[in-house]
Image 1 (cartoon, rainbow over the protein chains, first blue to last red):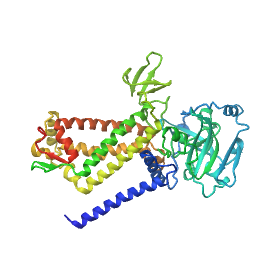
Image 2: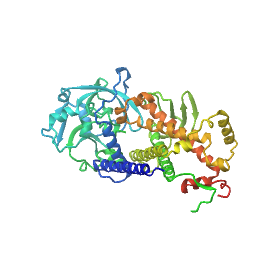
Image 3: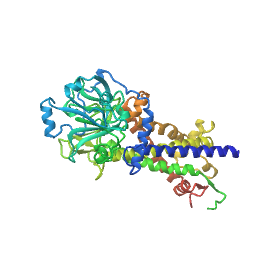
Image 4: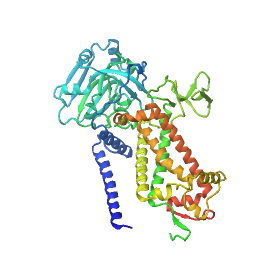
Length: 255
Length: 267
């Protein structure tokens, strides 16, 4: 009827479609791995949209002591077969060291007591596994951002990779990665305590990642080395994590 | 195509494209969703749920018998489903069914989220099309007269008798069609999307009120299943109605857009 209004609507429509396509292109551009198929486009979109949602680093909800799940459930490896790991477990990790290296000014090397002497943080949070189960745990550890600032992250750094002690079915130890933004979330910690005690073997003794804004498989257990990198392409198969490399799991695990 | 006088454009192009995008994505979502549920076929209420915690619904296997006995438990009721659903895979885990060969759980989740993007974009696009084109008012919103109990009763009776709308009557949606399409589009689908989002750690970090809205992480998962079951029921009735109302004429009209009044017999 009204030709000018009709035209305006078409312009608005074209602008919205254009903006949407621009957004998808931008999301794909900043995705850390190569885009091979539609799954990767969806993963890039999840990553982009959730990053916008979490811009202000909101905190996850915390629970009361009474709500804790005392016998904390597990998935994946619950007892690493590796001799080296079993030896450390038997000696209560007395001569075990944690390292933080890669693109940092001052690589760190800490024994377990040295890590425990760093400023500690305790949080009671809901853990959700991609299989569908969830449980509440009280986690104690040191903020990852604290360790990163002690080491001094180089300007070109983009991602943090977690190298673990548990060898998987394909003969490769577990690994996972997150970006520096998620690594700097105030509730992202390397935890050594669960429900007021040292983390049990099945839950990742002596040290595991808590990345509360993401789902279970990101929370690498049995962590012994944290590596700061500028790209994930050279980490194993280049998808950023063990499940991502072997099982087509999505890298951005906020969902 | 040269439409005859009793043939008219029933569905605009946008409606047709979005109908089939939605149909394809819902099919993929149901398929991948079943395999996601399969790895942990238990539903809970609240925030917490795991093997060992009380469930509101579960498939439980008794492995002391050979073959194992399968029980579907919903609330306090138990149903023996041995041989129908339930497989014991790597003790003590019970699944709904065995996974297809070469199945990858991570890839299946990726498929679910990819289809969810298509579905959500199609839904948003369709809602904005309904609002901006006037189609919502013209064809979907029931008039006050249509909402009168007598009229709804009349339409229910016609449905129960499987009576087909004829002539001019077939041009417009009846009160039941209007109410069911409207409630699926503006109530059920948003609830499915929101309960899905409540299972996401990062979304609930940004929007913790979703936990309060649906009662927690596990409640949202349970409700997601309930709402999807309702949507599946709608789809089954929708397809059944298609056969009652004239399959070829309706199916063709959702592809070409054109519907032939009174043409369902020889259509």
